[in-house]
Amino acid sequence: MSHVNTVDPLPHFQSVAAASAQGGSADDILKALDPALDAVFGHKLYTGLLYHGPEVGVERYYSNQPETYLVGGRKPPNDKPWTQQLLVEGHPYIGYDADDIREVFFDHEIIFSLGCEAILNIPVAHKGMVLGTLNILHEAGWYSEDDIPTALVFAGLAVPAFIELSEAV
Image 1: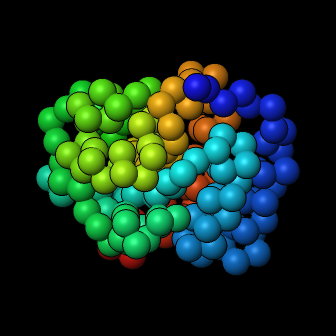
Image 2 (image 1 turned 90 degrees about the vertical axis):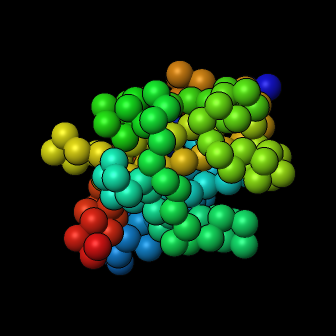
């Protein structure tokens, strides 16, 4: 089951831009992205991860389900093609079903327990470097290649948050 994107993303881009302009903190921007991404794409789980480099991996800075996916939780680096595609080359990744999730994520059973079997990982990049990712998850088959252009605009709006988080480390 795939969602059909019929929602105009412009008001949601504007709400995230306003959060950046008015409050401007990383938390403000990551929180504003939650309802915006949900309205445009739909998600059961949304996280924002800061990329610390190939030796350290990623660290969670935002989660809409903090009781299951704690802020501050880390995922170690892995040698999967996913890492090269998303974190090195800066290309989005879509996991379409449970097999895709199982292949990439060691915590797939937790992901499945939330009713999620599809993922859209969106790289947040600045000056040619991936700073982190926005990650939205839903039921199998939910995301498609058609979602990528709009998702990348949201990633661009997230850049100030990830610059702030990177500088704080």
